[in-house]
Length: 341
Image (cartoon, rainbow, N blue to C red; front, side, top):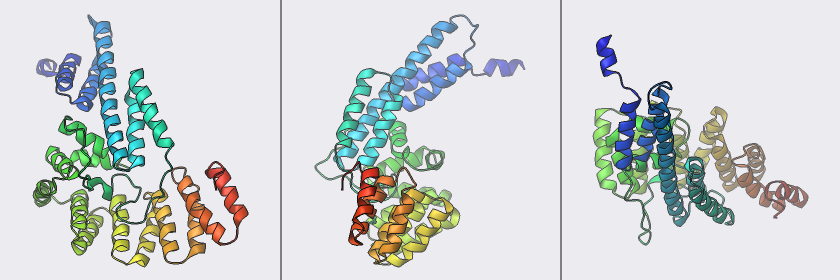
């Protein structure tokens, strides 16, 4: 019992760790330590009120720093033509920031984004709207320089994986620091460096995530058969990985096997794997196959997903107009596009 008390980690221990991490610009980790310190703080202890005030102040400061980093990422995403990812980072910044100046900057950036007409997601590998999927590793144009080199590895990694769906952010974290380094390296265009580490980690222990990340690289290099093999291996390890399913859809489309995408997307919708994205992609696929009625049905069903309603209406309206159903098209525009048609 005495040894337990001697080595028990108290509030001060976590506060010291938080201060060290904050000084190293590792703000996400610092915030976690400050929260732990606050939870372990004994209200009746000497200087408890002063320590509580300090911890709350540091939590606000860490949140403000993370918000500024998210605004940098949002601007970067805007430069790359990815307004959805930009909005995700702005929303994060608004949730993290306590400083009104930072919040004002976030609202201004959000206003600029709202003024731009959103582009419907494509069914191709490059431009689909699922954050965290194939576009994660697109290399930057040569005239765009990412202004985020000053971030720590952990904060950079956290910003990159946050938009991933479901439990994937937690699962990516569990793969460790070496994986995080490789992931950020690939994202920054250092493909060979990241690829070497991914292969090394795969030898140590196979996972659906590693196979998926390797599949994205092989796709970009034009090795489509290897890409498909990796995706199917990943799905054999974890059939619930929605990103693998969505990327497999994009692969069969890219390689001219469009009809094969239909059962995959129908399965995703039935099983609840990114059903909003899958519904939009299925509508696009059916339309490409000349099945206008079926495509329209999928668009109308997708209206039930708030995240996909506007994009579904944008797809449905021209189909309705081509069928001579102008009144229905106008009704959709009035409800989902604020009257624009």
